[in-house]
Length: 546
Image 1 (cartoon, rainbow, N blue to C red):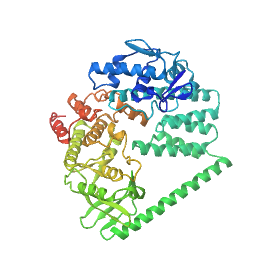
Image 2: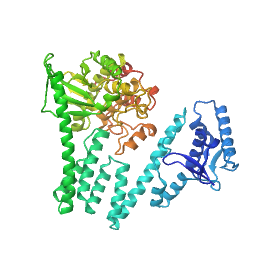
Image 3: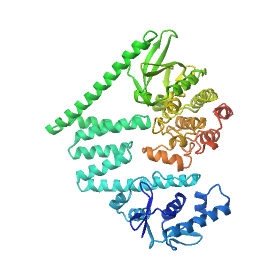
Image 4: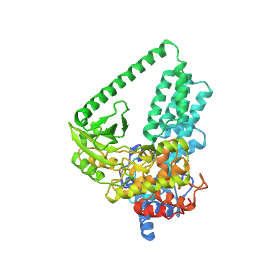
């Protein structure tokens, strides 16, 4: 009996042993998977051809499919593996699959079985080259199966709550919180379950972890309800066990605070020793960490302007090709556009890599969106034109942002100014070499293009245009495209979901403006604007009263 498993990876087994024959070739496994996912609904040959041979002549593609089907059946020694002619199903007497079992368990309300069958994301790590339609199909299926798994977990958690099984409720809500770590709803349910089970300190500790994850993954403030519940639990803690646990928590926090304080003291001492003759560092301002750098506010005595001095993380600096990094920073420093925050200087001393950038005099776009939710259309267009101008100047010098988002757009009296241009690209380029096991991944997934999310090293300026489109969408709609409490679902939607209508969220947006945004966030780079100049031309062509 054959068994096809697809959750957490893919494997075809024959009588319990992994099958290593011709049926295990990737495109053939993909055929098995698509037909298996069809369940009782036969899958047409045309669909298989469209998914797996999209660029091949129709007749040649159909021939390739016939050969693949024959090869699969020959390899497994089963001439009746597939049932049907123009449309195909798998013969359940010959092969069983976990996707069909999971579907049946979900339909029957067998939540425990759904959870047991789901071993991880559908087809995790599996891909077929030159078949983008198949990849999009996988993303849609992955989202669907993950939703079935989440629904089963939630049902089990609810059942445990209803029967007063506090330990069971904690276990299920914990798994849900792990599955969707930025979901405030699941965070709150887990905190309440922990508190009901007598572990208020555990609930408070989880709140801190959840808040840190939300800030890191989404770049936004966590749901205030999480902090409010943590505060109320902290106020109501009593009993010696809680005191002991809280004492351990406080001690651990104090140790972490002490380590951070010592690191800050070392950095401030280095700044004073190395750059103190030219810069007044604001020792009272908190250091700002973003990705692989930590920044300090300072005042440039010679230029008479406020600046930020950024120090590259020691771990990153240890593996970075400093020559590549400095060459990239030189390129950034050559940009002279008024809408780009200037990079004044960079260097290395005592093993520490640093760079100094202008600190724009204004508020960030992130703060304004948080305050107003949706910007007036005229204001949003003004910001968009300034950001597009900054991108055009940077791209002309082969400098890309790589992490464009509202926190890097500053609203000044002279217009919008973009900071951080080229920094992510410089660090990624400097760490992508034989001494590192993988390219350093930086940036926020909410604004990153599909090609950046999958780590495609061939990404270009069109990735910045995608991020630009996300920002304009957020200024107008009050949320990013494909917004979701789950980063996994949000990322998956970027590969499979249709364009989320901007006018459905704000009808005063013109069709022409929506079309510009939609083209910016097109899934394929080839469908976006070729460059920022073409994007600016499109923005300038909009009616003046918009």
